[in-house]
Amino acid sequence: MKPVKTSVNDPITVDFMEADVVRAPGRIGMTIAPGKQDEDSGAIWKRDLDVDLARLKNELAVSKLVCLLETEEMAQLGIPDLLQKANQLGIETAHFPVDDNGKPESMEQFKQTVSFATTALAKGETVLIHCKGGRGRTGMLAAACLVEQGYEPEEAIKTVKQYREGALTVEIKCEAVRDYAQSYTKSEFH
Image 1: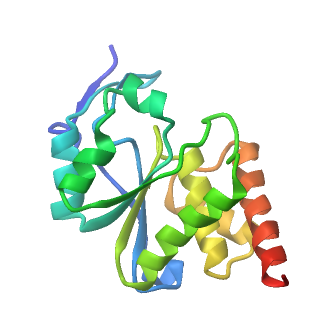
Image 2: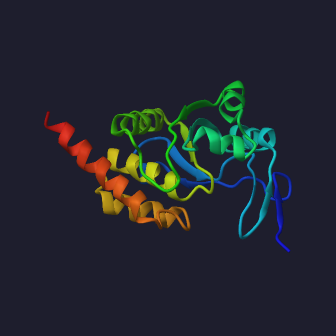
Protein backbone atom coordinates (compact mmCIF):
# COMPACT_ATOMS: atom_id res chain seq x y z
CA MET A 1 0.00 0.00 0.00
CA LYS A 2 1.30 3.42 -0.97
CA PRO A 3 1.91 5.97 1.76
CA VAL A 4 -0.39 8.98 1.85
CA LYS A 5 1.70 12.15 2.05
CA THR A 6 0.02 15.19 3.55
CA SER A 7 1.28 18.59 4.60
CA VAL A 8 1.01 17.44 8.22
CA ASN A 9 2.67 14.01 8.13
CA ASP A 10 5.21 15.06 5.47
CA PRO A 11 5.89 18.84 5.74
CA ILE A 12 7.03 20.29 2.44
CA THR A 13 10.80 20.04 2.13
CA VAL A 14 13.07 22.22 0.04
CA ASP A 15 16.59 21.54 -1.19
CA PHE A 16 18.53 24.79 -1.03
CA MET A 17 21.56 26.06 -2.89
CA GLU A 18 22.92 28.70 -0.53
CA ALA A 19 24.65 32.02 -1.25
CA ASP A 20 28.12 30.53 -1.76
CA VAL A 21 26.76 28.22 -4.46
CA VAL A 22 24.52 30.73 -6.24
CA ARG A 23 27.22 33.43 -6.08
CA ALA A 24 24.78 35.98 -4.68
CA PRO A 25 23.46 36.92 -1.22
CA GLY A 26 20.22 34.96 -1.71
CA ARG A 27 19.45 31.28 -2.15
CA ILE A 28 17.54 29.00 -4.52
CA GLY A 29 15.15 26.38 -3.20
CA MET A 30 13.86 23.44 -5.24
CA THR A 31 10.72 21.50 -4.33
CA ILE A 32 7.52 19.72 -5.39
CA ALA A 33 4.30 21.51 -6.29
CA PRO A 34 2.92 22.94 -3.03
CA GLY A 35 -0.54 21.62 -2.19
CA LYS A 36 -0.54 18.95 -4.89
CA GLN A 37 -3.24 16.28 -5.02
CA ASP A 38 -1.84 13.39 -7.02
CA GLU A 39 -0.90 9.74 -7.10
CA ASP A 40 2.34 8.38 -8.51
CA SER A 41 4.27 5.12 -8.30
CA GLY A 42 5.57 5.96 -4.83
CA ALA A 43 2.83 7.79 -2.97
CA ILE A 44 -0.61 9.31 -2.78
CA TRP A 45 -0.26 13.07 -2.38
CA LYS A 46 -2.99 14.85 -0.40
CA ARG A 47 -1.30 18.11 0.47
CA ASP A 48 -2.86 21.32 1.78
CA LEU A 49 -1.87 24.37 -0.28
CA ASP A 50 -2.40 26.84 2.57
CA VAL A 51 -0.27 24.80 5.00
CA ASP A 52 2.51 24.32 2.44
CA LEU A 53 2.60 28.01 1.48
CA ALA A 54 2.56 29.11 5.13
CA ARG A 55 5.55 26.86 5.86
CA LEU A 56 7.41 28.15 2.81
CA LYS A 57 6.79 31.78 3.78
CA ASN A 58 7.07 31.64 7.57
CA GLU A 59 9.55 28.85 8.26
CA LEU A 60 11.70 28.81 5.12
CA ALA A 61 11.64 32.57 4.32
CA VAL A 62 10.54 32.18 0.69
CA SER A 63 9.86 35.61 -0.83
CA LYS A 64 9.75 34.67 -4.53
CA LEU A 65 8.14 31.63 -6.15
CA VAL A 66 8.64 30.46 -9.73
CA CYS A 67 5.98 28.01 -10.92
CA LEU A 68 6.88 25.94 -13.99
CA LEU A 69 3.58 24.05 -14.18
CA GLU A 70 1.29 24.44 -17.15
CA THR A 71 -2.12 25.91 -16.28
CA GLU A 72 -3.95 22.63 -16.95
CA GLU A 73 -1.46 20.78 -14.71
CA MET A 74 -2.23 23.16 -11.87
CA ALA A 75 -5.92 22.30 -12.24
CA GLN A 76 -5.18 18.55 -12.43
CA LEU A 77 -3.11 18.80 -9.24
CA GLY A 78 -5.93 20.61 -7.45
CA ILE A 79 -4.02 23.88 -7.13
CA PRO A 80 -5.49 26.23 -9.77
CA ASP A 81 -5.24 29.10 -7.26
CA LEU A 82 -1.60 28.49 -6.26
CA LEU A 83 -0.23 31.75 -7.66
CA GLN A 84 -3.09 33.84 -6.27
CA LYS A 85 -2.73 32.32 -2.79
CA ALA A 86 1.05 32.77 -2.80
CA ASN A 87 0.65 36.42 -3.78
CA GLN A 88 -1.94 36.94 -1.03
CA LEU A 89 0.65 35.68 1.48
CA GLY A 90 3.20 38.18 0.20
CA ILE A 91 5.19 35.75 -1.93
CA GLU A 92 5.84 37.35 -5.32
CA THR A 93 5.30 34.88 -8.14
CA ALA A 94 6.43 34.27 -11.70
CA HIS A 95 4.64 31.74 -13.89
CA PHE A 96 6.72 30.17 -16.66
CA PRO A 97 4.79 27.15 -17.97
CA VAL A 98 7.03 24.45 -19.48
CA ASP A 99 5.88 21.12 -20.91
CA ASP A 100 7.00 18.33 -18.58
CA ASN A 101 8.36 16.40 -21.58
CA GLY A 102 9.90 19.32 -23.43
CA LYS A 103 11.90 22.48 -23.09
CA PRO A 104 10.93 26.14 -22.98
CA GLU A 105 9.21 27.38 -26.11
CA SER A 106 10.33 30.99 -25.65
CA MET A 107 13.99 31.77 -24.97
CA GLU A 108 12.97 35.35 -24.22
CA GLN A 109 10.53 34.25 -21.52
CA PHE A 110 13.16 31.80 -20.21
CA LYS A 111 15.60 34.72 -19.86
CA GLN A 112 12.96 36.90 -18.17
CA THR A 113 12.22 34.15 -15.65
CA VAL A 114 15.92 33.63 -14.91
CA SER A 115 16.24 37.40 -14.48
CA PHE A 116 13.29 37.43 -12.05
CA ALA A 117 15.13 34.85 -9.93
CA THR A 118 18.66 36.24 -10.16
CA THR A 119 17.51 39.80 -9.42
CA ALA A 120 15.96 38.50 -6.20
CA LEU A 121 19.10 36.49 -5.39
CA ALA A 122 21.19 39.65 -5.73
CA LYS A 123 18.94 41.27 -3.10
CA GLY A 124 19.47 38.39 -0.67
CA GLU A 125 16.04 36.85 -1.17
CA THR A 126 15.00 33.20 -1.11
CA VAL A 127 13.69 32.07 -4.50
CA LEU A 128 11.66 28.87 -4.63
CA ILE A 129 11.44 27.01 -7.94
CA HIS A 130 8.94 24.21 -8.39
CA CYS A 131 7.26 22.03 -10.97
CA LYS A 132 5.26 18.87 -10.23
CA GLY A 133 8.01 16.71 -8.72
CA GLY A 134 10.67 19.40 -8.37
CA ARG A 135 13.32 17.65 -10.44
CA GLY A 136 13.21 18.13 -14.23
CA ARG A 137 11.84 21.57 -15.01
CA THR A 138 12.88 22.84 -11.59
CA GLY A 139 16.44 21.61 -12.08
CA MET A 140 16.52 23.13 -15.55
CA LEU A 141 15.62 26.61 -14.30
CA ALA A 142 17.91 26.37 -11.27
CA ALA A 143 20.82 25.40 -13.54
CA ALA A 144 20.02 28.27 -15.93
CA CYS A 145 20.18 30.63 -12.93
CA LEU A 146 23.63 29.27 -12.13
CA VAL A 147 24.69 29.85 -15.76
CA GLU A 148 23.52 33.45 -15.33
CA GLN A 149 25.73 33.62 -12.24
CA GLY A 150 28.81 32.59 -14.22
CA TYR A 151 28.75 28.79 -14.25
CA GLU A 152 29.52 26.77 -17.38
CA PRO A 153 26.42 24.76 -18.37
CA GLU A 154 27.83 21.33 -17.44
CA GLU A 155 29.06 22.68 -14.10
CA ALA A 156 25.61 24.17 -13.44
CA ILE A 157 23.88 20.87 -14.26
CA LYS A 158 26.27 18.90 -12.04
CA THR A 159 25.81 21.36 -9.17
CA VAL A 160 22.01 21.17 -9.30
CA LYS A 161 22.21 17.35 -9.31
CA GLN A 162 24.37 17.51 -6.17
CA TYR A 163 21.77 19.56 -4.32
CA ARG A 164 18.55 17.97 -5.63
CA GLU A 165 18.50 14.20 -5.77
CA GLY A 166 16.98 12.94 -9.02
CA ALA A 167 17.20 16.33 -10.75
CA LEU A 168 18.00 16.72 -14.43
CA THR A 169 17.89 13.05 -15.38
CA VAL A 170 16.10 13.79 -18.67
CA GLU A 171 18.44 14.94 -21.43
CA ILE A 172 16.02 17.47 -22.97
CA LYS A 173 16.12 19.52 -19.75
CA CYS A 174 19.94 19.53 -19.85
CA GLU A 175 19.75 20.61 -23.51
CA ALA A 176 17.59 23.54 -22.44
CA VAL A 177 20.31 24.65 -20.00
CA ARG A 178 22.90 24.43 -22.79
CA ASP A 179 20.58 26.35 -25.14
CA TYR A 180 20.17 29.02 -22.49
CA ALA A 181 23.94 29.30 -22.04
CA GLN A 182 24.50 29.55 -25.79
CA SER A 183 21.78 32.17 -26.17
CA TYR A 184 23.06 34.10 -23.16
CA THR A 185 26.62 34.08 -24.51
CA LYS A 186 25.47 35.23 -27.94
CA SER A 187 23.48 38.11 -26.48
CA GLU A 188 26.59 39.37 -24.70
CA PHE A 189 28.17 40.23 -28.04
CA HIS A 190 25.22 42.03 -29.64
